[in-house]
Amino acid sequence: MRVVVDQDLCGTSGQCVLTLPGTFCQREPDGVAEVCVATVPQALHAAVRLAASQCPVAAIRVIESDAGDDERASADPAPSPEEVERHAARDQRNPGGHDGTV
Ligand code: SF4
Image (tube, rainbow, N blue to C red; front, side, top):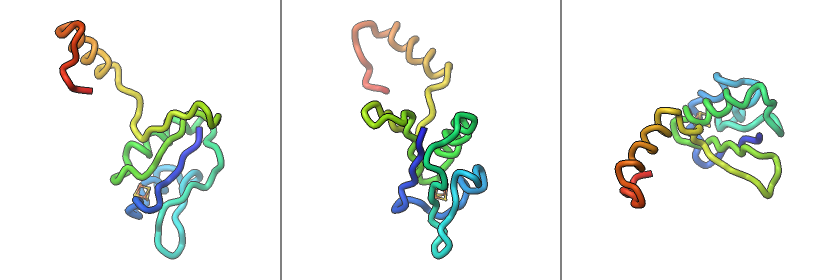
């Protein structure tokens, strides 16, 4: 896993740095967040996904694969079991069709 911060979007709240100080840091002059590590250790994957989901301006992008040809980037965590179940129930009510929601 890799993680990047869109420094044009970062609102300098420092929330990610408080959550994971070894992974995120803030630039001295302006407080914009930076990533301090090249790759995220397995033990911190869930915490990084959480930090990304809690960024108030969605400036943190998580790249799940380290391989460049198989990148799946998202700031959103995987859907919860409840969301998966809700979508499945919706599909059963509307077989063969789509109601336009995602
Ligand atoms: S949580 Fe988001 S807005 Fe706040 S410092 Fe980190 S990247 Fe910037």
